Length: 528
Image 1 (tube, rainbow, N blue to C red):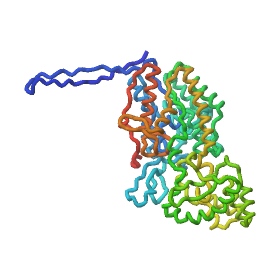
Image 2 (image 1 turned 60 degrees about the horizontal axis):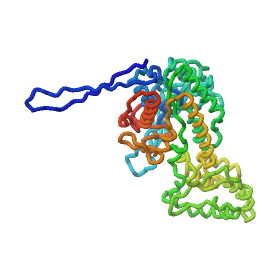
Image 3 (image 1 turned 90 degrees about the vertical axis):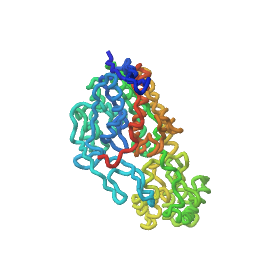
Image 4 (image 1 turned 180 degrees about the vertical axis):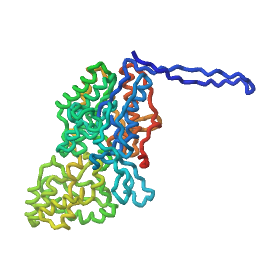
């Protein structure tokens, strides 16, 4: 039996017959009953990853957790019989965490706006506590080894993939120091037992209603690493087994729920903010070098033309922004051919070999390439690791330094760029995963939020949220927080409303919507 709460709206009828009259028109009341319909919100448990936990601005912290998607939903559920919703709050609003006193998770970002417009490059997202002259951040007060007792309704574990939610030992602190790690610091902090799984701890609470948003990290990890292979996409068979196992278990006690599918991760601000052509000739550190650079690349460009790949030619414009130079591992490696052609034209063997090594799979970036957000901090900077590599090939320090400028003379490494073939892998996997999610939704008659479709609309003009237009731009679009991946508080509120609409449709409830103005898009750096 669903508990119903009455929501009273007082409507004052103004009907003064005369200013000297003592007779006022009586107030009337219109009774609006908030009901759960076929759902039972008395024990709500949320499962997922960072999107469920409330991760924002690159970290998990108290204010963000209070504005998490599940917590916003739980407040609406409370109007229709929902019970207490407990979250494993961090110790501060700094974000980040330590293990044995050593910082293992960084603090949150905040938006730094320099009051002096002279150095605009200093404006933008910064780690909390940093200043223009140092790189020291506030030390988090959340210690992972200081575990929390009790059960938690918000079982969102930042970094978790689908199969991690079923993995025993994912909360074992010993697994944090293995290579690769077999545990997650956020779950270590709250696991009921080192060998318990996230799903087991969720089911121990006997949920009557659940939310499930998992699978993003199964493709996002690969995307964030530029598709370099260090964090591979989850196998479709493994995802299918894990996801169906989660849904089957969660619904085994006749619980109802709402699930979200996986958006196109390449459409998020993390991949759409840094332009493929950021090399500005008006930049004092780059512009004056363009003639020299073009002269240096002229011989290589002749070789590219002779080898039938003129599209790989590297030339920087004097009157427009130029693309960065990238390494595209999908290209045929022409290192040997470049080396041989240069030697045949009188270039010494050492120089020819280094040129072949550097540019065998190099090309200018184009509009089909996606640069990851952190690349903005390294483009045009000297790569010290590259210097060491080049010196190992026999170059003197000065020459190695000249050939080690990221994106200019040293092609951006795989981890900084998602090339079209890598984007295609992500798209194929995402479509397969979403098909699994859709089948589970249909089989169990669950409420469903098409997060993929919503992000498509946000990326193509935006979506209205009360008086605000929610768009996908970093910092000022309203949806994405300063890390370019996770929503702002207002973004989470928007998604909570979409979930409430889906629940109302699926189960006949009439949960009210929250207001956009009640949720911020930025958190103050003073919030600690």
